[in-house]
Image 1: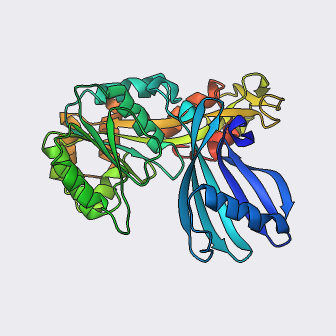
Image 2 (image 1 turned 45 degrees about the vertical axis):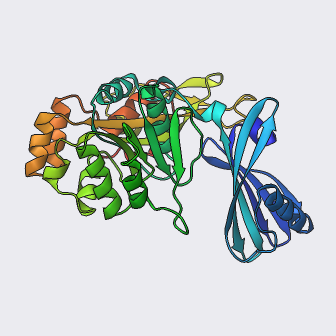
Image 3 (image 1 turned 60 degrees about the vertical axis):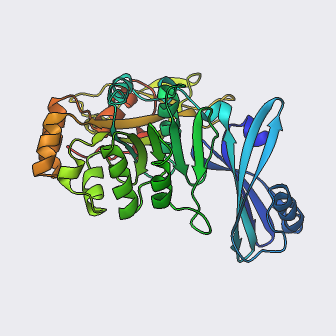
Length: 374
């Protein structure tokens, strides 16, 4: 209940020799809450495993479990994962709170221009829509928001996820398991026989999954998925590396969104500060301007930040970009043409957010390299 109240995303139970450390991940940052003597840990560990239907006799292999918890009338799913360490089992509990995590497109924290371009891209009847970025940057949450935005009674939406985090109405969701169950390739092949309109594939991670996703897009379906690359333009060489050819990709990619999550400045203790000459250079200014920072207050628990927002770039494909993609996947000509059509690089979006007072320069530098183009 305390973790939910503090809007934490994970609870870490970490045994370390003579004590057990308890930490919460709040707004992407781990914070230590307390420590307990190591003699308490075996009983707590067994209780957590019993509640999440895990095998209490097995302590030398990793295990996964789930449980449901109620805070008043709110139903909260907890995903529990154990991992053996030299001091005993380490347990991490992922808090899946639908009220906080299932957001509309306008609530995701994107800039207005990115939201406008996403909605424009979603109007295409078929093709692949890809969200890319590092682990924990909100790719799945963004995909759920997009599915909720286009979901109607007239559409058959089916998903393959590993695992299913949030259960959504009107959407058929399937778990993908590496051992003893269907994999992504088999799952896509099965879904194509279920008369889908829209397919969500949790992640394109190998050549066979990439081929099946493209086949689904080429047969008139909207396909949504995620990929691990640094930026939107980097997704094209990655897909080619997975065995897809440029002519196959041309005309079948709707859009690619690259994003990072950064903490928002607390609106109550946010204050204007002076900008140094070096900070002005990083932000692309010729003369110093105003900046914003937060000292910390009771509401933000002294951190100076409260909540998170998405810094993003979106590359929307059109016939002209598709034509260029057939001849090259080189970044420079693609980026030049995309910028003529309104493509805004992620670092430019990050600079705008800092100057607007949404977040701090220090926070942005942990997620985006602003030295590009200096």
